[in-house]
Image (cartoon, rainbow, N blue to C red; front, side, top):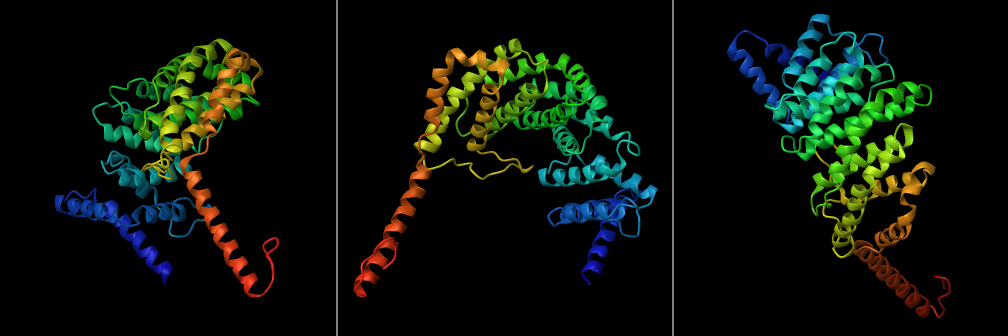
Amino acid sequence: MANVAVDEDQQWLVNCLSATLDPNQEVRSFAETSLNQASLQPAALLLKQFIKKHWQEGDESFEHPAVSSDEKVVIRGLLLSTVDDPSRKLCTAISMAISSIAVYDWPESWPDLLPFLLKLIGDQSNMNGVHGGLRCLALLSGDLDDTMIPTLVPVLFPCLYTIVSSSQTYNKYLQTKALSIIYACTSILGAMSGVYQAEASALMEPMLKPWVDQFSFILEHPVQPEDPDDWSIRMEVLKCLNQFVQNFPSFTESDFRGIVGPLWQTFVSSLGVYFRSAIEGTEDPYEGRYDSDGAEISLESFVIQLFEFLLTIVGSRKLVKVVTNNIADLVYYTIAFLQVTEQQVHTWSVDANQFVADEDDATYSCRVSGKYLYAGKC
C-alpha cells in the first residue's frame, strides 16, 4: 500500500507540473497554488524520489514507468523558471531537483543548463535569481569530474569573482556561496594536478593573483562579533587558500607574502571575538546552528578552519619561512586560544559534582554494610 501511495503522490506532482503550463489561467493558478502549498509538505522529497526512480532507464534504482522525453523537457523548463523563487526552502528544493536531473542529463541532454545559470547569477536586478543560481551551481559542483572542470572554470570563475568582489551589490551570504563553488572546483582541480599538474596549473595560474587580492581584502578587516555571515565568508576564503597552497605550485611565496598581513589581522582579531564569546561567555550562541543550505555557521567551526590553514602553512617548506620571524607571536596567540572555555568549565563542574555524588552514595552504602570504600568498590 505504501508504494501505491507514493506512486499516487508522484503522479499528482507530475500533473501539477504539467498544469502550470496550461493555457487556461485558472488551471495554471490552481496548479501553482497547489505546488506552493505542497512546498510546506515533503513535496521536494517526492520529486527527488520521482527523478531517481523514473528518470533514467538502466539506472540501478529505476522503476517503470519512465518519464518521456517530452515530459522531461517540460519538467526541466519548469524547474529553471522557478529557481528564483523568493522562498529559500522552495528554492533549495528546486535546486536539489535540478541537481538530481543534471546527474543524468547534463551536459549532453541539457546543454542550456549552465548558460541559464550563468545568466541568472549575473543578473543584479534579480537577487532571488542569483541565490537560486548559486544554490544550483553549489549542488552541481559536487558532481563535477575532471572532464567538465577544464571547460567550466574559465567561464564560471569570472562570474563568481564579480559576486565576491562586489560587496556593495551582493551580501555576504551570496559571496560565501560563490566561494564555496570556487572551493569545490579547486578541490577537483587539485585532485587533477596529480596526473594533469601542468594542465591544472595553467588553468589556475592567471586567476590566482586576482583571487588572492580579493581574499586579502576580505581578511584584512577585523573579525566581527556575533556575525555568522562574517565568519562563514572568512571560513570559505581559508578553505580556498588551503587548496591553492596544497595543490598549485604556481601559488608562490610572493603570493603568500601578500596575504600574510590580512591573515594575521583575522587571526588576532578572531582571538578577541573567541575570548569574549567562548572563554568569558557561556558558549558560542551560534554553536550547532546551520544556514538554510545546511552549512554550519558557528564561530568554533571558523576557528577550526583557521588553524587548519595555519597548519598547512607551517607544514609547507616553501611558506613556513615567511612566518618564521614571527613564530613567537604565533605561538603566543595559539596558546591563548587553548584557554578553557566557560562551557567546558560548566561541563566539568557538572561531571565533578555528579562524581562526588556517586562517591558519596557508594561510601554511604559501604558504611551501612560495615565495609570500606576502595577504588569505587566496597
